[in-house]
Image (cartoon, rainbow, N blue to C red; front, side):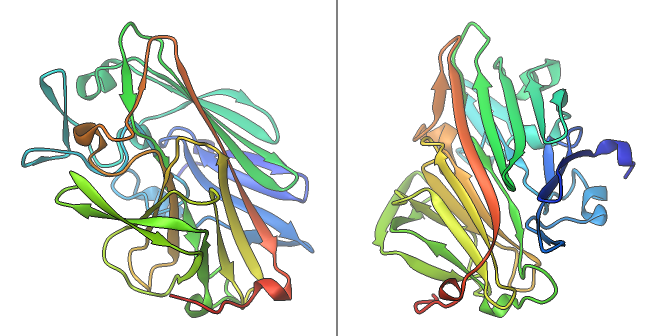
Length: 311
């Protein structure tokens, strides 16, 4: 992959990030420095990038205007709107489209995606989506802004799909890592997400080494924040989306216990959202949708390195 594909952010010796705007606005890397040692948070490699767009198991792909899959009758990867049926791939089109760089600084970049003739063939709506990534005090912040510049409604669901390293570095052990979730409700589908069942869960720790079928979903999180801990490395990741109230769901996924990544994904809706219309965002002309997130890598204290209820 040519180096000019990448966009680099650097905050002195504190933090750095790398993006590929022309490859779906793809955030590929974020790392913090502790005692001159860089701790990488997001899994990626040039070999993974070279497989784009057939495979995007890395970094933090953007999910828009659809999270997961949608189905109309027996037609998967389709949705209906105003008596017409359109094809739309899993997780939408944004991660497969080139984004424009509208502003670039040493510690921040703003990317933009807008509708065009190609997008309107499968998603007949006007939109202006701006995404700003910014390094501040070592943390990686990003702000999402979706605007409806068109004459009609703009429906969408949205999400982010970060692939976090497990273990966090060569000195870590995946078998001992866990994700901590606050008090929440577990969500399971009925049919193809036509309905759901929800179960209350107290705060708990989930092993990143435990195999599970498909994707796990949670909602009504007491706090929109989750942590991933690698006790053997003494490092943790903290993902916070308190500034994104419309992101009511968290999806957890990994390919297998042998995969080098674990995904913690804030979403505005559940699968099949264009069919159920549950939690579907619909902007009227001129309306704007905004959300804010941050990610941090932390060196952990002794009290943070033990868990008693690893599930």
